[in-house]
Amino acid sequence: MKRLVILTGAGMSAESGISTFRDSNGLWNNYPVEQVATPEGFAANPQLVLDFYNYRRRELLQVKPNEGHRGLVALERFFTVDIITQNVDNLHERAGSRHVIHLHGELMKSCSVKDKEQSFDILPDQPDLHLGDLAPDGGQLRPFIVWFGEAVPQINEAIGYVEMADIFVVIGTSLNVYPAAGLLHYIKSGVPIYLIDPKPVNTYRTDVEFIQKGASEGVKILTERLILDFRSLSGVETRF
Image (cartoon, rainbow, N blue to C red; front, side):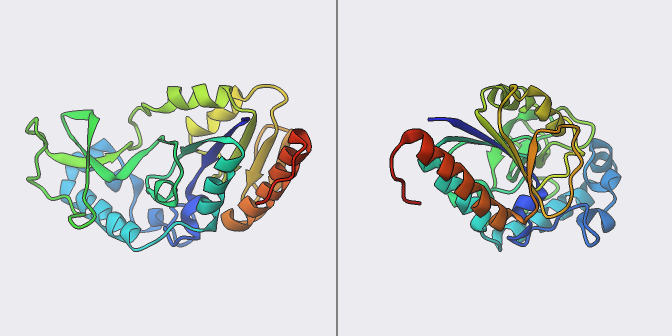
C-alpha cells in the first residue's frame, strides 16, 4: 500500500475542545511560555508548571477524539498511515491510529528530571503530578514534554518517514514551529502535498493543495479525493 504521512498540529484537536496556544483565547495569553514551557521556568517555579500541566491533563480526560481523528484511522484501510504530531494529547491513539510519533512529548506521561529519555505512564484516575513525586532514579517527576530550548528526540525518526511518503498531509498547524516545520524539506519530488487549515498558512512550497476547512471537514474532503485516486489506480470498487 502507498504510504500516507500526516503532520498534525493544534488545529487537529481544537474541535475536540483542546485549547490552542496561539488563538485569541489561547493558553499563551494566560501563561507566558517562559514560565510554563521552559526548563528555566520549571527550575524557578516547579509548582506552577506542575499545576499548569495537571490542568491540561484533566482537560484532556474530559474530551474525545473528533471526526478528523477518526477519519485518519479509517484511511488505514487503504494506506499505510504514519502520523507525526506536534500535539501532546493522546487523541490520535484514542481514536485508534496505530502509528503516532509525538514530536513534543506526551501529556499522559512523566519523566525524571535526571533522565528525560525514559517515560512513565500517568494513570487517568491519578492524573496529577506533585512536588515530591519521585522517579525510580530519585529525581523529581516532571511532564514528559519537550519544552522550548530542549532537543526534539523524535525528529530524526519523523524525517525518515517523511522521506518515504507517497502522499504528505499537513493538518492544523501554522508551520511556524521548528524543527517540525522543516519536515517539508524532506518530501520527495513529485509527492502530492495537502494542507488542511481553516486559516491561510504561508509556505514556501508552490506545489501544495490547500483545503481551507477545519480538521473534521477537511479530512472528509481529503478522504474523498484520496479514495477516488485509490479506486482509479486499483481498478476495483471501494466502499468507504
